[in-house]
Length: 384
Image (cartoon, one colour):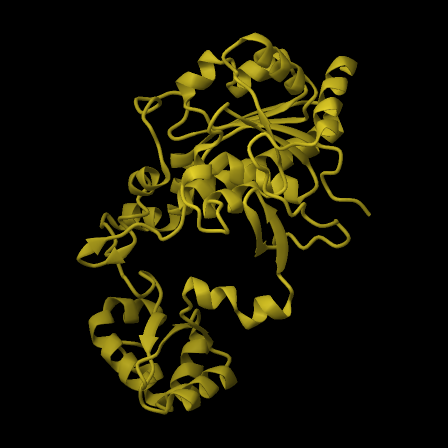
C-alpha cells in the first residue's frame, strides 16, 4: 500500500501557522510540499523563538516534511519560475493578506483562471468581502472576534485559549476542504476554488454556546474550571489538594457517581441536583457538595472508585508531563526529526492509516529542497 496522497504535488506560499499547519498534514499523508519563502528571512515563524534545539517550536510543529524554495514573487525570473512550478502542481495554498494576494495574482480564483484543474486554497482572517476584509488577523485577534475569549476564563476575567485555536481551526478546514476537492477531482477532473475565513472557521467551533445564547437571549457566564452547560464536568481537588478532571455525561453515570463513588445514593434524587439542568441551575449550591464528596476518601481510594464505576476522570497535565505520558510512550508516538539547527523528537502524525508510510522527519532550512521535486514540477508544467 502507498501513502494516501502519494504523487500529489503541493505549492504553498505560506507564513505563520494556519496555511503551514494545513500543508504539513498534507505532507504527513504523503504529498510532496514545496514551501515558497521570501529571500532573506523566509517565513517569519522561523524567528519566533529558538526553543527546539535552536529552531522555533512553532516552525518545527507546522513545517515538518516539506521542502523550502526561496523565490521573490514580485517579478522577474523568480516569478517566471514560480508560475512554472504552479502550473505543475495539484494543490496551491496561500495565506497572504487579501490585498497582497490579489496584487500578486494569487487569490484562488485568479489561480484557477490560469489553471482550471488545480485545487487552490486561500486562508484569510475575515474573507474576501465585507467591511473587515483588509484588517490584519492574527490568532488572538480572531479568538477575540469569534467569541472564544468571551467563553474562556473565570467569571471575572476573560482569557485566551492557551494554543493557536483560530489557526488550527482554519488549517483543519483547509485540510478537509482540499482532501474533499482532490477526491472530487479524481472522479470529475474538476479543480476547486477554496476561500476560508479564520473568523468563520472559529465561529463554527463556538457555535453551540452561540446557539444557546441566541436561543435564551443571555450571554453565557464563563465557567473557568468547569463546563458551562454540563455538570459535574470540570476540574476539582482530591483530599490531598491534587486536581483531577471528572466528567459525567448522562443520568446513568450520575447515579453511578452518587451510589458507587460518593456512596451517597440519596444525592442522585435530590431535586436541586437530580438532572443536569438542575445542577447547572443550582451550581453554587452543587459545587460545595461535589467538592466535599470528592474529598471524603483518600485520593487513591477515590480514584479507584471512579475507575471501578466507569466515571471518566483524568489528570490535569502540564506540557512536560504530557510529553512523558505513559500512553503516548507506550504507543511509540514520537519520531526523531532533523532540524535546521540539530535534532529533536516530535510527535508522529495522528492519522494512523495502516501501511501508509511514515512522515518525512525533516524540518527544512531556508532554501533546503530536493532538486528532483522542483524538476518534477517544472516537467509536469510542460506536459499539461
